[in-house]
Length: 275
Image (cartoon, rainbow, N blue to C red; front, side, top):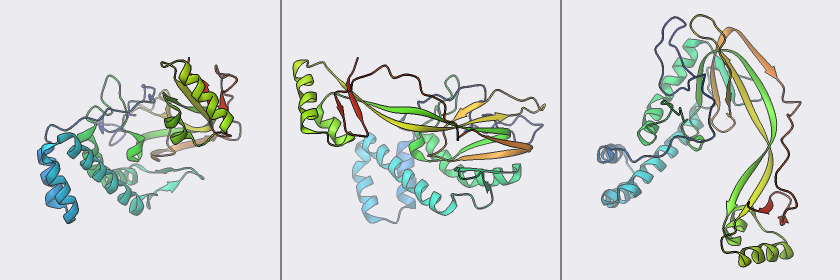
């Protein structure tokens, strides 16, 4: 969503998402930075861990591995920062949700604390929040999402499913756990009969979402942005007339599943032959 430093100026903060774009489930792709050598040197200069320095020095001739290590270092720094600064000490929690709100000065001050880590993340995901796709940073980074000029938040629950595909029984069991001997044999028989066959596993869950309504600089209410926030957290600049609509007690019905009669079911994952 577009963020303004005040309600009368259009100075966008580039890590935020345009409100008229429905947030996709994808995230910005990982890209090796052009200035990887410089980033490695900065990391080495700042590091006091001898093992870390030795490993990164050895990886200097393997850019992909070096980039992955630098990204892992960023994730570790984010985790450490979250331990100290999340939940935000200066903001108010919205009920039992990982959503925190405050006035403009408070949210901007908290955003400034995160800015160095956001800048580092953007080195690896340079297309994040840029047109035409406006893809977000990966939720796996666990950087909070910041939204400004918020008038209303509508909390909802939706029955949903996680879906994963597998080309072998071993990979399936490694991810989804054990199945009965009879079910395991059935899966093996299916894969044996057709070398091109794939299995798809579904796991039901309740998807928690926030529909965030913002106002533009003229006070016009904009279309809502649907946001998943339970992993990253959501930081909200609340306008004076800020409201909360909580519909979590009435989960919306999930659409009928196109897959029926699972080949295997261990109580968590149901496995089907992928169509």
